[in-house]
Length: 510
Image (tube, rainbow, N blue to C red; front, side, top):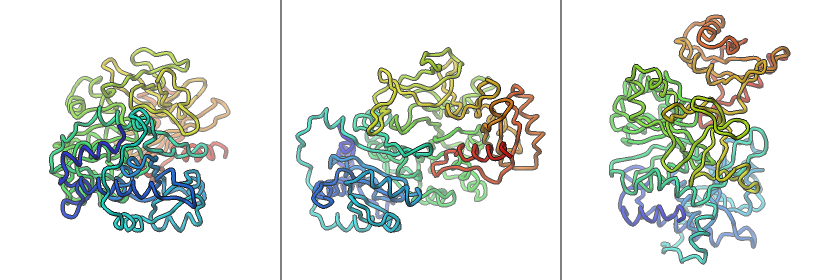
């Protein structure tokens, strides 16, 4: 099965249901299938000089064209490659050049930034739409000579890593990985005709890809925001009567600010999934209070695992928020339990499983797990197991608690200290709105603990240090607390710890 088959099923079972856009003026599943097949026809005949294109790439904001490109690439039998339009011009040119020969669909300003792109056929989004309109209605693609096994093994999507520690790597997601994820997490045609998903995460993020596949297979309408802005998100959710959405924790906090300021409750919203970073308990408690009718899900996943691998369900949220048992209440800051069909273990540095409650690295295995990079194979996978490079532990009931990236661990005097553990204590202080903890070089201890705090009210460094000291061991007390107006996040809401580490190091070297 390739991912295009998911759209064919939806178009056959729900041809007249709106698939993408507003109820008035959106396109149906039958129309989406037609546009995707036209795209495939165009890609099959496209070339750069005499060389056929081998990929369908995109450097653009969210738009209704995104699912057309994803499914069109699938029907054409080439990888779909959405890329980060926020990269610096030189980095963007390097990245698009790595995908040649390719057909590249771009936002008009991107075409100017790329310049003379060798090995690429570049079309703006509107030019691409004009090309499709001139093509005859596409028929069902002819059977490919490749067998089912070859189709399943073919590359569906390439997603590039951020490249913060080197050149971006292309994570490989094959048709079998994405199909495994969708078939195990969604039910075909289960969505009501009134249901709609609001997508505001970037198109080059795994959540943007999985949102398309999940919505189409379920029969849920897709509504796009070009980019996230809290006020626009709330307005669109209200006007389009959005029922489902996925946001990252920083987005959720800003959405709640708007809801409180406007007095809006979003009565149509029924399901809100959060992921992409640690969920502060104060934020989810506030969300449950402001939106009591909404089912909240906290999801943990990676690009290399085709999206979500564990979930804290709505039932888990309600049980935790209403419980007097500290162990159950603590699950509000967990990412729940693994999805059915997945195996998850916590392992030590030697790769051996650890006991319940013991920290280590999260390893995962299952049909949706790729763990592969273009030109680099599957890395250090062992017997299908993928090491996530995330640290965490499992409680007695199998709930997963994350501590952060292994690279984020602070080693002070030979002791491993989790930044997440300190952040959880600091964020509970009523004067702390946001917080991040990093390590900086220290002559005496190897590393020192440094905290960056966005305050919500007046508070001193000494007060926050004492707040940590009485709740954690003294070695976890920040030697320095810096008060800042904002913390650095990328466009998906992930904290840029490297930026803070650089700042902390500058201070340490003074």
